[in-house]
Length: 344
Image (tube, rainbow, N blue to C red; front, top):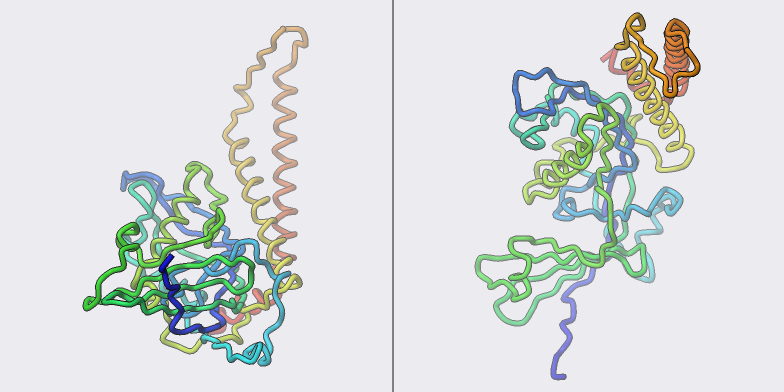
């Protein structure tokens, strides 16, 4: 047809460092535009969340498909940096998710305004547990130099799946013209292609309170906007070497992950039980009235009240057992880190 295929000027296979995060966080939050309303304590779970590990431009995009788990990985060995006769570039870790907590606490109230009706106090942010699993994601980077006075184009392709997802990155320059295709994408410089329906890369799940059904999605959108901003890689990059000997850095294996997920599940059970007890405790048993239709059983309100009190006591006992079970299931490495904070 007279068209000549543009060949990439350079192809580079590389490992992009990334973090998989499991965490439980708490903070004071408001779900109202009224500044006089009291805050609520919000509990958020992050399970299988993805955070970038290197402060390059690739930090702004998700490179780990949600279907990829620890079962699809293998331990890293130096031999993996040379495959099929080609050297594979391994980018260093220079973003620490463990350092981001202290940075988050230093945010201003303006930055932590999720939307008009949802904001949180960064100074109240606390992690009840966090496990950070470092992983390396294989990708191909293809660089193109179109003929004529046009900006360069970079294509980032996932190398662990067939066909892999990919991104088109327009590298704009003030001295060069934009490609005609860019007119369709406005100011976007990373265009996602071949992507299946994917959930939020950060996967926040607000388990308490449940007063705002869209809160988890709203928090996800806020986090995505923050990390995908063009200035985010520089802001996220640590000024200190990443401490891989920190006991909160764990290997992404079943032996490490399952105990953390079990501990988090106990947390969800605790939240539900506490909510149930709180609801029951607001009931005035002396004012209970029984309405029956049809009116045949003649139920004694005192028996109903006694049954409710028995249920309340049983739930309190269940809550105590859950608290004891969760304390017993706390990973030893997390206890070690907590103890180190008491002596530091």
